[in-house]
Length: 328
Image: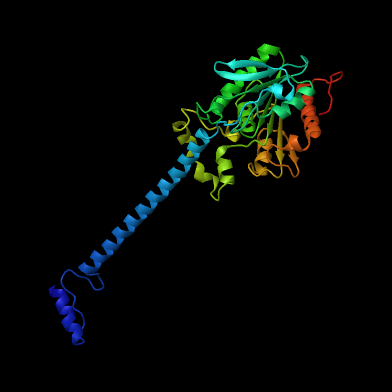
């Protein structure tokens, strides 16, 4: 207080401010240091609050994504049987508690294991199944465990196990090689299973994708890195299932014949994902102009069957000479 009073008095008469013992010229006063320290504390508290809010938002975005993927894939649709499209079938279990429809056909052709998509069940691809059966293919339309809503979606890891069980069942039942065909989320599941090394002769993914993180980024203004917490968080929401990233799961030596089908007007899966999937799996890419999500067969059934048929024949080195192949 003495120093401040002296400064004020000398300043009033135009004299120089004194320099007191222990105080250098230009050194801030105790009061100035106090205000500077208080501003520093406020800044640090504000910065910490911003960091906490951003971290909480980051966690919440990823947690919500995990919850949505794990808990919102079940089917709420009725389940008409293959008989409704004129197909004879057998109701079977390809693993304990896992149902499928087996539709027999030519014993000389590979069995196509068909995997449904999100919000669907084994009845969803019945229209495509009818066309494929007319080309002579035996079919196994499987239902994945999450479809009835009693178990969360397993992120692709649990579904890979179920697809592997379906392949084993088809091999043991028919003695023929197996081709995997999946639609939408099922397209992702068969790609994930193929990348994980299941014993299939070929894989066809229709409107599939590479990873949930990439798909989330495609449907938001946020970069993919924002969704990096989804993988470690996902087991907490899925009863232990893990998210599969096909790009990370596919080995460098991946060689399974792969066909990637994608409509250029798909509003659910970005076209770049089809290109990425074909590149990662060293597969054939069929981009269909003007077609929406999983709609290629509905728009051009004959071209669809011709393309799939030619791919399977090349992949499995089977001949269709003499086979009954009426057009749809």
